[in-house]
Amino acid sequence: MTLRYGIVGCGSMGREHIENLFAMGPGVAVTALSDPDAGSRDAALALCRSPQPQVFADHRELLASGLVDAVVIATPNFTHAAILRDAIAADVHILTEKPLVTRIDDGLDLIERAQARRKLVWVAQEYRYMPPVAELVRLAHEGAVGALHQVSIREHREPFYPKVGDWNRFSANTGGTLVEKCCHYFNLMELILREKPVSVYASGGQRVNHLDESYAGPDGPRTPDILDSAFCVLEYPSGARAMLDLCMFAENTTDNEQIVVVGDAGKLESLLPSLTLRHARREDWGRRAAWGQPSGTGRGVSVRRVWDTGIKYAGHHFGASYIEHQRFAAAIANGTPAEIGLAEGLRAVAVGLAAHRSIDEKRVVAMSEVIAPNV
Image (tube, rainbow, N blue to C red; front, side):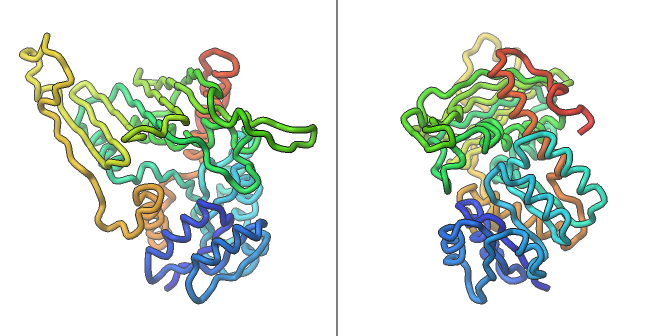
């Protein structure tokens, strides 16, 4: 039986999903596309194979067409809530891109609407499926470094790419950089520590990027207001802490994404794009014998490259989107729940919003100020 997909949003991420779906081979078909932008529709259609999917300008026409069993929502952030309301009301499985929403109230409304729903609503958080990251999480959960105390994630990268209509240049459209870009990382911190954060402290700003850009607005020219750098510290009920170091004018680097997990018995590191995983236990040093010796020698550190040879399309996320699509299709076939549901997707958004509030108000923000603890 063929699983028929509709792509809602044919920009760069929508086209990435198309490439992944075609790589999955027989049993999967892209049967419909929708996007209000003709250029995006044409670019997506050019990737598709025969038989060509039917093309719509409005997602509601796609949902009513009867042509699809599942939809992938890859539209601008600020449109997710309205499109998801329509998709939840339809008889289709849903994979929606991050961030789930840009406002907490919208997310809570979607959770309520989906409560009695039997078909999947899955929030795409593909970073957890990147092979060295997935291996780091597996080892951490198996106790390879003991009780977990610290998680740190560094992303030093290039500025935001241009989008259709430059919608991603303004926080009102994106939810802010720490929602748009970093909800992946906040979700990953929750996954690794298996706890929800209780507070956030952040410092950040717009220091370099987009300062010389100007866009027409209803009240005259507008300069982008998206921050390009930040530090965020999250605290958890157990006393564990997590930290994010984001810089979006640091593309002249080697491994631009680094995840570090430290437990009382050792340390794990995942590095991308080198696909490197490092692992060492403290007893490998000989604890008492090592006292007074300098760190940083690499003694006792295991270093290996981690890849999944079953990945048929690496794409822009080191094969993670391909793996996520495999998991999504398997959940549909097996009738199992979404691995990342609406509540989990909303919590990741909430951390980003709390971090922006912390920056604006220069204080520690309790998560309970942003989202109820039971969500």
